[in-house]
Amino acid sequence: MSGPDAAARMIAAALLVCSAAACRRDTAASANVSADASTIADASAGDGAHARVKRGVKGGTDVTFVVVSDTHFGFGDIAKTNAALVSKLNAIGGKRYPREIGGTVAAPRGLLITGDLTEWGKVEEWEPFVATYGLRGAESELRMPVFEVIGNHDKVHGPWVEQQVSARHGGRFYAWDWDDVHFVALGEAPDDEGLAFLERDLAGLEPRVPLFLYFHLALLGPWSTGHWFGDGDFKRRLATILKGRFVVGIFHGHHHATGHYQWEGIDVWKPGAVKDGAHTFAVVHVTDAKMTLASWDYDRDAWAGSFTKPLR
Image (cartoon, rainbow, N blue to C red; front, side, top):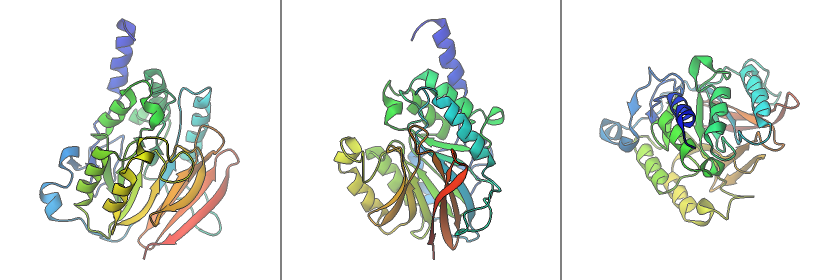
């Protein structure tokens, strides 16, 4: 890509990047509006006063969030499917949960996207992702903050997409709190740098703080081997870091499926995918007492399964 038109597009895309923090503590974290967030740089997670006084559990947690995966902008006419999904995400608040859960869905705090944002990692694929998923703030189609990570497809044509995600969130990996719940975004999957970030970040938390982790590549099952994360020792090292921690769950994409399994005694969910036929997203609700997950099928406009577990 060269010439004045290409340069203008690069500059315009760069202007869409916001300066969200790498770590946000005890704030209503937002990828679109971060003015109220206390910030801790990626390199200093776990350093200083934050490390000396570990964050504990206050109580009163009531957090709702949603999870999608594999948006794959650039693949056929998938932009239309993503636009339809955004419409359903905007409308999920106020719907009645399945009978086995009961109650109604609260307004989600934000949307987690577990990678493969684009088909090939091109600028012209990132731009419609930005427009559709609300990274422009007030001009957004999606009416909630977005917390995205990259997938393997986002790296095919180079580091462009990863650079944009890193610029938005202050680093390749980032973390924040909603009430007592701590979230850690670990990119495509936790590599050496990601594992080091996670270890530093968790050093600032008491072991009983509830955690959610998310990244793109699978831990078990289809497509969980044959790549750097599946065939190295990263999973073993991840399990070691998480030992003794209160991990409520892990989310990942890559498989283009909806499902649940356990890895190292930890609940793991695949929320569905925009690409291919698993058109569901996960609606997660966490309180001090329990966690529920309900899958919404946005083709049928109906619930497609649920999961509940106590947290006490």
